[in-house]
Amino acid sequence: MSKVGLTPAYRRVESATERRVARRGGLAFELPTGHDPSAPVPSSRGVDAPFAGYTPNVESGVLWQGTTTQVAGFYPFAAASGAQVVGVPIGRHLHTAEPIGLDPAQWLKDGLVTNTGIWVQLQPGAGKSAIMKRLGLGLVGFGFMMCVPGDLKDEYTPLVNAMGGQVFRIGRGLHCVNPLDVGPMRDAIAAAVGGEKERLLSVARARRVALLEALLLIAGRSALSATELLVLELAIDLANDATAGDPTIPDVVDVLTAAPAVLCDVVVADDPRDFLRQTREMRNALGRLVGRGLLGGMFDRKSSFAIPGNTPALSLSLSALEKEPDDVMAAAMLCAWAWTAAVVEGQHTAGRRRNIYLPQDELWRGLRVAPGLVEAGDRVTRLGRYDGIVSAQSTHSLLDAEALPTPEDRAKAKGLAARSGIKIIGALDHEEVGRLDKIVPFTDRERALVTSWSAPPGWTRGLVHPGRGKYLIKSGPRMGLPVVLELTARERVLYDTDNAFAGVESSILR
Image (cartoon, rainbow, N blue to C red; front, side):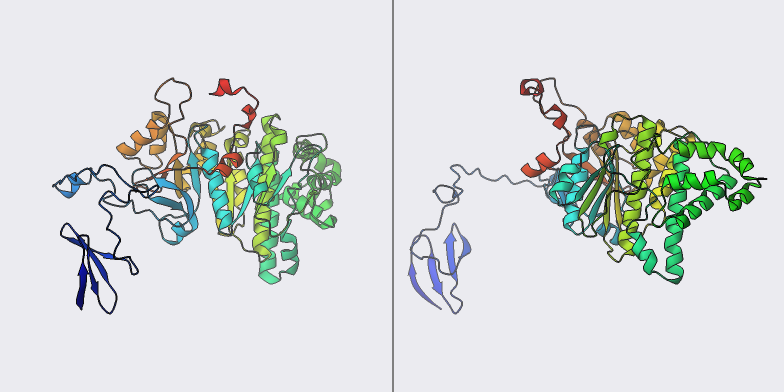
């Protein structure tokens, strides 16, 4: 090693590795290989050139000394939040600015949660749909298929179309869905043998029975007796045997009206006329669903479309029924849920095992129509499902569950929130946070944070809602992750739910 020269800014040292060392103020630092020895070392203010990061004034540092607990308050990045970056990018930690990722499947594998259910709750306009759509977009990018089982306001239509998915509008004069259609399961059932074939047939049969039982509740029937349930099951079997493809609800009604001997034996009827008299209420309730009844032209015929096996996303749009009575909407939602569940099952049984993302908005609108509908609807959607489903259910308030007709329904509905492994909580008032605290505990600081997002600080026009895009991700008793979500310009267009005001003068909205 030999000295070859000195300048006021540096001294150059040659060695086998061609290291360059610059000294300034008693400190030494390495210069990159190939650095021009004649170039001066920049000052502590940086390089005085455009876009070079020059700082005209550098304040001197202040030395602080204290315990770990005390000093941490001066520098919030002293300890990381512990959150994982992998998964769908949700945003940045509100306090540490760390990137936060949400991956329910990976959290389940890592033992952080016990299930992949997601409960989303916050005030209207604070970003409930935005977070659910960001999850859908990200999960589809990871290979999931997004299924929207009944989009009441066409909120997901732009996103599904942008991803190259399929949107089917259900309504009178529009597309029709046969809720008794096994769909993609049909080929799998035909190819299966032995116990697997029996299992698939049992799943299809059980879902059909559960759906018709739920529709009968909507149509005015009380809970079915054991005899009536057996009659319904046998009628579905006979209708299935009599049709070349899948039976429809009118096919089941026709079987009941024909009063075959096997059904007469079940109710111990002396003759077909006696059978018709004993099953009159059930037949009339089913009859209300077809023809010119509640579901006429929408769910009482063969499906008018088929699902491509490789579609990244699909949605059943029920926006054409938005102005219909609650019983019509409830029946349509149940049929859409049943059909979507059959599609999901069909994807698995056909060998195209894909994980599914299942977002459900406005969950309570259909469930408050009739007693027992929560339990029946739960069976319609869950019978025979494989694992691999990430479901996201949203609401604005737990009081929505209080509108359900019976204590049993209310308890079942609240259990949906309690069983969800992940809670995404946004802007809420003190009372709502208190109700949620009975399901997932909040610390005092978390409670103060969530309630601070609930309203603008003043009445000055143009203020942005303080809770828009801010969420607290909770799972169990552990500390939550406060996250702020920033949408891209493209997402702001795709996720816009205020397009109903697009024609209003901007001076009114500003």
